[in-house]
Length: 392
Image 1 (cartoon, rainbow, N blue to C red):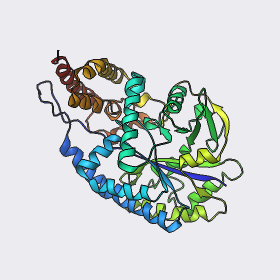
Image 2 (image 1 turned 90 degrees about the vertical axis):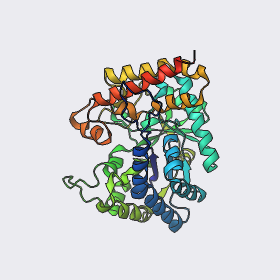
Image 3 (image 1 turned 90 degrees about the horizontal axis):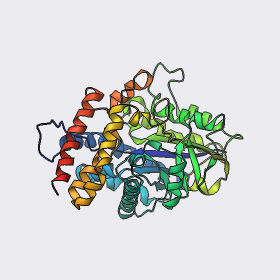
Image 4 (image 1 turned 120 degrees about the horizontal axis):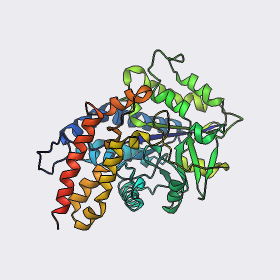
């Protein structure tokens, strides 16, 4: 009886405007572009997908549940450009069948250089979720599903009972992602993404060259049922934008989601659980040792998408080099601008990875090349650093 844990990541970065060495203004962010993208994705994904999930929650009366992580960056854009999205998430949360997870407010990898800043961003996110939605997150989700032993210890210290992580082959080593694990040196449980089934939806759903196309709800439910007898849970962790944005409505993605609960619940004892419910019901079967951070990105399942080349490494180091200076100014706007620069997307745009993962990086980047992304970021950072120094 696999319990299906369906989790969606909701994120929109604050994209930078084109900023040259000759610019002197403090308006670093392309609000017109951010507004345009936010409204477009809201109309294609957030609003119709939320309406569909609300319909399913009501239809199955306590048997269908989902979880979300809403980044602070996304929440700020919704409040500014599409407040109706916030209202629709509030309606979902009000059903009692939706769990909201904890992560860093600015969707950052700050822990690579400053645990203090990362902690502050996690607390900012927790306070925002509590204020807007009336929930206190119990389960931790690292940016881009980043996880390591250190992050597991961190999650426990901020009061979480469980954390999400990638079911990476190089870490599992023949073990299954369909059971729970115990974090090494921490008393929290780990829910591992079933990346094969998750990616069938997120990346392969509309691929007509895929041997399993078309992917139907009943076929997918049969794959999930194969976990019966060999595992406890099927963790489907997916970007929410998969529904309607990355996989357009014309692909049939909405119909797939609409019919999936029916076929999963048709098998006796199958159910849907939120991450905290999974952690409460099932015992950990083994300890998972993750000395180096892993993520859900690319074939390597590590952090090389954000820190794999010299440009990314230098840009991130220079950013955190001025952390104390920025905070010492006491200027709220300066601190907010600096924190917006910690968002992981800015470093993702600098990735020079090609081969199997190059197309994915190019799809998400607003720049013509990784080098353009690096130069633009550094121009902004140089100006922000000068602002901080001007405080004396």
